Image (cartoon, rainbow, N blue to C red; front, side):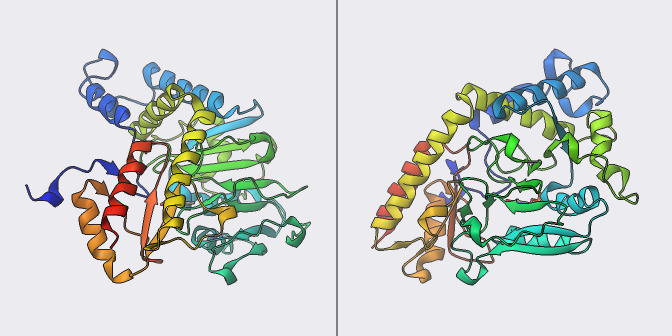
Length: 363
Ligand SMILES: *Cc1c(COP(=O)(O)O)cnc(C)c1O
């Protein structure tokens, strides 16, 4: 084995991202024979009582972890974050023609482009002029359209490394959040939202499953041409079992939620997440060889985007960090540089190992 072929010790991938090692171990144990049935979870019908009870238990655990009130439905969908970008206007526009969007980074821009195919998109606020290194946090500057069907924002911009620590302050318009990369990383008050969605492959499991938490007063407004499979009502009516769901991904999310509960839940992991991110940002700030240009008020605790004072050293940084067991530190292709994703599954020791490597690597 060459050094670069050693298995990674810590996986900083932005997504699909690392699972907790306990979850991977559990999957390996379960794989040949799930619940002693002699067949794997991948080989049973989603109509079996065993799968239905798994589905119910995943929902109950999620409700418990996020204190989700009864008037919210939890839907288990497919299509990732991007399918939601189309489903939102299709399902929620009703007889309106305008939707409000915050434009706070690359994921916002993708969401806006898709919504624009169906509705007039009013930009509530944007810090594109700052290269998305800051967030519009002053609600006095928001230009909300009183006739908008909803207002959408991206809670954590995974590529730009910026995060709303609190939801933007808006009143009288249903608030919708893309929490694909920060759901369950911090406490939220679900009552502030009309709809929250997240693809699973960042913080909740593996690719294939998308969670939607929707307040019941948003249902029943879908455009008549909305595909049955893309209508939120279908999932409410069938317990998300209208078509064959991604059963394995659903099962993995169940394991991740159980793991999170065993860590003490969202409050407990939030304390760890804050500590991990602060450690890394503090190190970058005090070290002349490393740079982070995101404003302090909105630095993402999930995705730390940084670069080297001498960018010519980036390739060597990636080769040597990989050889040191630190996997997937390359920045997104749109921004270059480096990115360390510190989702719930990243232990604090992984951040310590990264900092040790960074101080040894610097000249
Ligand atoms: C990853 C991600 C998505 C999209 O995920 P897909 O499942 O690839 O469509 C959307 N929004 C945010 C904030 C993300 O991080």
